[in-house]
Image 1 (cartoon, rainbow, N blue to C red):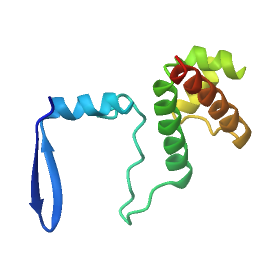
Image 2 (image 1 turned 135 degrees about the vertical axis):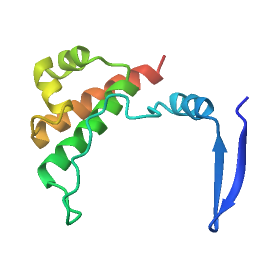
Image 3 (image 1 turned 30 degrees about the horizontal axis):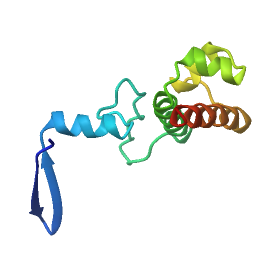
Image 4 (image 1 turned 180 degrees about the vertical axis):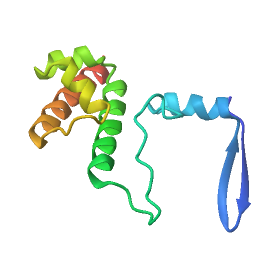
Length: 121
């Protein structure tokens, strides 16, 4: 049983729970509690801006990694489903390579099929 406490702080109602319970909820939701090896976003400049290309690469990479993991796929399994090389997926997931919209769509279709198959069990 997950124990949580509700508190009011600065007009916001918050829920406080142990880190272990939080991680249990995240796993049940198919989400990582922490970054779990996801690529880090670039640091902001002194002016508060971030390099747009690097930010976009990291954002796409993080979304793809989460979706691939939730579908229960390894990089190699996803590569087999998409016809891409595993090395290409690795570069995309490490935010070292900009994927074309067509490549992202191909990856998303494969993940959607795998997720549908996983839920159909």
